[in-house]
Length: 139
Image (tube, rainbow, N blue to C red; front, side, top):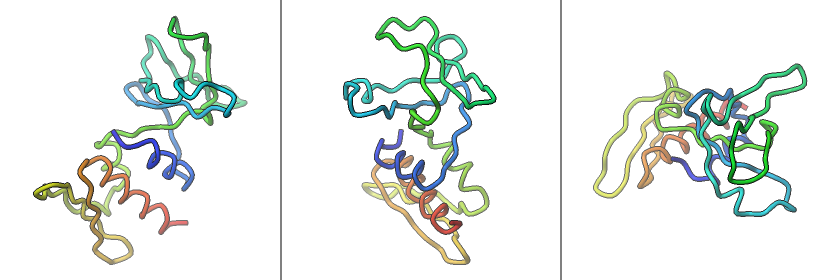
């Protein structure tokens, strides 16, 4: 799972999330809400947390959760934590390789005709760094 910091950078750079079952997320609520709530990681599932789309926007509805009183949150109040496979898919044709180094993973991509490499001890984080560079290039 990528770090919250990288997830926020991706969101702020313009990555759009279309929630699907199995997606993980954390909340990004106003500062007057307890910080512990933001540290929890949730998973979209038709049984407990479902996506509801309305003309006014998309919400994540919490069905039958008893941990704390929350019926739903706006999609804008959630931070998507994409999985490694989702990040690789978002890189599309730019992705070249994932290599295991002695103490890190290296993601190789081609951006604007240039070979770029991103290293991190966590493969998902390396994918996320590459995706951030791709989004920055397209802005």
